[in-house]
View (tube, rainbow over the protein chains, first blue to last red):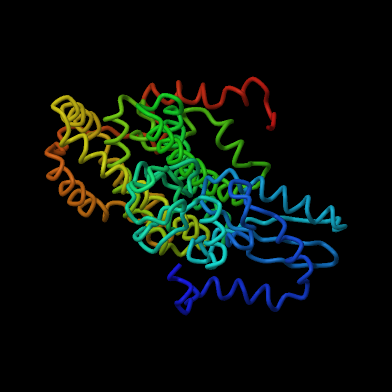
Length: 173
Length: 254
């Protein structure tokens, strides 16, 4: 992917999110949460997706802040439950999952690595202005939009004209 | 913030939540009834965005209200007179042309409204708007394409679209109406001055209609009443379905 040759410029919110993890006093909890995946796209974690925003521990109680991808995304409930389960299994008794709306989630927070995992899974990763989308199966750029809304709110449905395969595209938000 | 202010803010959040939940419910009625699978998915995905938006507004209203009020009691325990959604949202879904025309008119409106609301002095309302605005851009992209497709399609599709617009036009002025509550909140920089959006909305719509070969009629008639609880007969039917489970089994959870 040509993106690998570019120097990635991080959005400010993403820079701050990575800083929160880097300077966290509880890195072990962030690491544990790497095992919590997006239930709709089980190859990427909630960290890679940009949903996991912050982890704080106060008097032994863990507070995890997450942000939804879309306002009505039903997966957010599953993610909250998975977070609680993951931490409780690791011995954290008191866990609270907070939902925050600001800053509004953006696909630009996803790393090149996360986007590569999406493509390997068969989902075309989001592109700036939804242009230059490649078929995740054969790599062709000769594609057509089938529907603006696919199997979930975050995806659109495309078809490749070269290999004829339909595929999901992770919309740019 | 004083209690009066909090009540006003809660009332405003409820209005926006009511608009969203009713619209989301109407769209959800297309589930398994869409003209074909892709549009079935699209309409229900848009429905989800609106229901999520409603949850955000109503949860905020519940926090401001306290006294055991939750997003669920607001959505499921209030009857028609207490619902404050604008009338255009509660009209039956009609045919695909009607649903498309309404969605398009509302998407152009939401684009302007949410853009303005991101500047609200109230941080929570601004955050909800920031989130919703991104979704509305996708809704508009789709509904606009459908306007062009229906308008430039067959005689049948253009006629149905034109009929839908004539049925809808009298419900649009209410989108831009400011009452005492919203004027007061707008002066504080919290609420959006809806009246100021009308001209921009009309010219955006007219540009699309020209391209689609239809005309948005002049407003020769108008109805209002949603904000004060005076609804069409359709809202009761909608609520009886939407609230059935909570009415039959009060307090039940999934």
